[in-house]
Amino acid sequence: MRHKADDRVNLQPIDIIRNGTEKRIKWKNIFPGDIIKVKSGEEFPADMVLISSAQTNGICYVSTANLDGYDILRLVQPNYRRATHFTIDEFN
Image: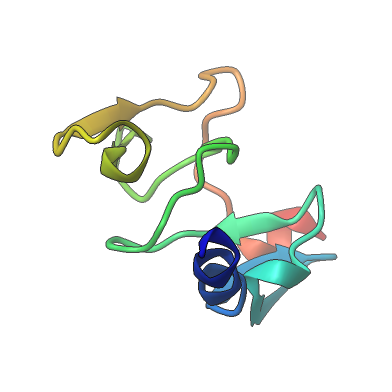
């Protein structure tokens, strides 16, 4: 049963930046080091690190209901030494 749920997630499309180029791939094709572009309302995996957000203060709020059952938003903050707004050109 769990593998069917994993298969559904792994086949979902996601936008990434790899080698300075933005691409749309399936979750199952993500590699360590890929920059993942998560939009409002999309899943934010528990093992992903926030680099920056579109908010002026760089933070975002994430629902952890699928992990802990609590239906509240949790604040996620980037490491402030690395927090900045990036453009695709900056990853070349």
